[in-house]
Length: 477
Image (cartoon, rainbow, N blue to C red; front, side, top):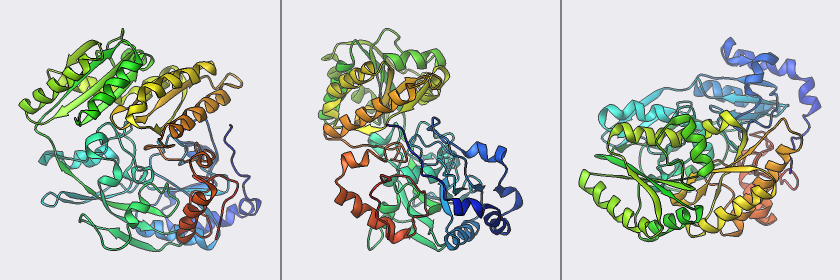
């Protein structure tokens, strides 16, 4: 099923010069991007198979500037697409021809660090990894760690409720977010939550986190920072079949063991990544698990011993426990670079579905069959411990029909996730990629209830248009 974009509103296009004239006084001259060549850098995001040229791009430097831009757009009926670093893998930051992109990348300061209360206040354009960098000198870190953490912003992490390899133990963004400054669609600035664990009243923070830029634009965030563990040790387990690796994962979780991370890669992903990273991955394995534990040396030894005992029942073909920080860094370099390494050799679509861990063996087998049935290769790289799958469907966009085959395979995989008791997304969001599949997970009455919430925040539906909800059957205020 090809992804459709709404036809741009001709009335908005006709007013483009007037809209630009209205935006110019609101931000610095260099913060308004208007030429076609400059706008082209913003026509897509991490879902690179789809492109739309924005009406213009605005890059404010303060919350006050964001507020002024939003107030102007609301008063003039201009749609707005919020954007962090543009690393979205679901098309969440792709533009629309009659919408401006409002990017927060210039808003990247650390505003306050409170080590005593373990919080950090940051502007939303700061990168995920930069938060840990700002607190590491005191032995703290920010837990959610998407593979794109070097580039992705906290704004995008909040929009999609991002996770990462270590979310098995530490949770995803919503578990580490305490408060936000939110600019509403009409420019109103509100504070939600704060530097404390819970706020009275409705859980508006939980509503905003994961709302995909549909309710407002986050410009500042207060996040939880954690004391780093005494030490950590990852181990590599190779298996002769994907079923053994999946069953081993389920057995470890069923035993009540919660490693800090448990990552899965199949043979295709192992070979692609090892060619790039030279991480020491087992090339002869059909599947591999990276399992990391943390704590004191004795705690790590004890937990790894329990994990090894469980893994033996599934006939591992290889086992390598990191013996140094250099080896640990190499192991994680491979995993963190898996998507980029795949992009070196092929176009791909990265899916993001979640399933019960007990269904892993069945689902992995059926993912292979689905892709084989479409004549496509698949490289499986995902967070095995919490069942958050990331199959990379490889295709050649220059071959007619291959993108459509990849889309069809992706749709089938996501439907499979729902069929076995999971859901359409774990951490990438819905965006445009899964928009029409929302009907597969939800009845119309459920979708209408969700849209009523959007109506409260954005009655004109100007915020991140054509995302999340199916294009047909929308219920505007």
